[in-house]
Image (cartoon, rainbow, N blue to C red; front, side, top):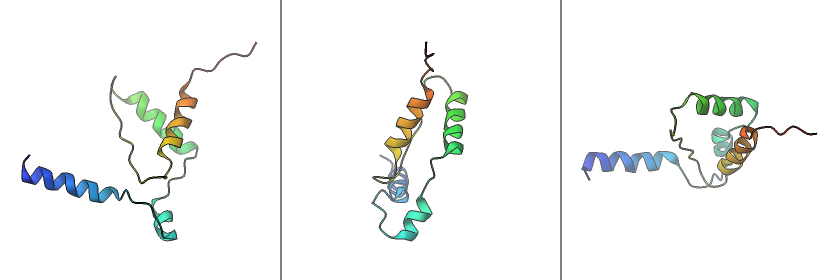
Length: 83
């Protein structure tokens, strides 16, 4: 691997800061409110993406990535008519 490319990957990994947030100011700085606006934005991005496109969800352990994706999956399901 090219040394410059390796350094870019190493810096990207460092920038992700995947270690748990400990201090309250860290939590507040990186907190994402998964309200309606976030869900609307995700749905728009998915609808506007190319077929078979890929999305990357990154964040530290416990920040809510899986929870957000689960909520998104439920919201994207076709609605069943109740008879």
